[in-house]
Length: 114
Length: 114
Image (tube, rainbow over all chains, first blue to last red; front, side, top):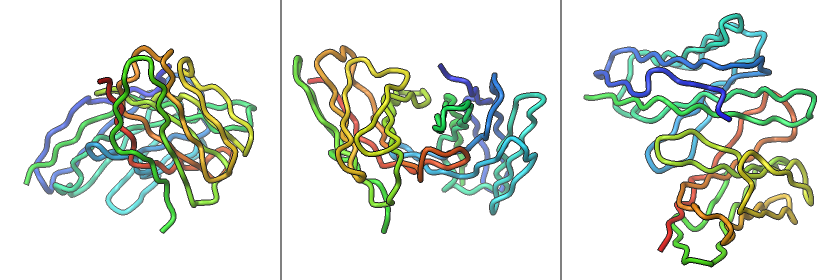
């Protein structure tokens, strides 16, 4: 079952603009992770935010987590053409299994035009 | 450089044929995973392994089999029982069966039916 739902499904912006994508989930989580996938390639880990954290930054990336609303957002500032990719959120809702099982959303396709 | 190597990049399967996808990692990670990705979709977990000689079914294990005889290797066999094998297959690893860890991905194998 897919817990994470990204919004929007697709986003088209110009270079230099900011891109915001959202993720909603259904159950309580240990952490939420964001990944990037370039066309035909594997996923690349971007940021992991734990359930007791509200905001994290990494370079031009900013992730927020609102556990009361069961939602997260990924902001990419000053976007570049190289940011063109699909972005996935993944939630770790493992409970007492001693094993991290990620459940991925369907992704947001971001197109950044020069 | 440490990473995950998947081979082959493209694979074609004939009716009634079993095919094996290779996944090798030199990250010294204990946990390894196999995912299936269909067009425009997120990732779905096929099998995972927390340690050598142990593996567990994921959400869509029917028609697939795995082995984990070495820490570095986690091959996936797509059997003839899998009636809709056409997909992009991704292998991943993480440090161990712990929470709050990112997963590292290979570049995938695209499997098609002849």
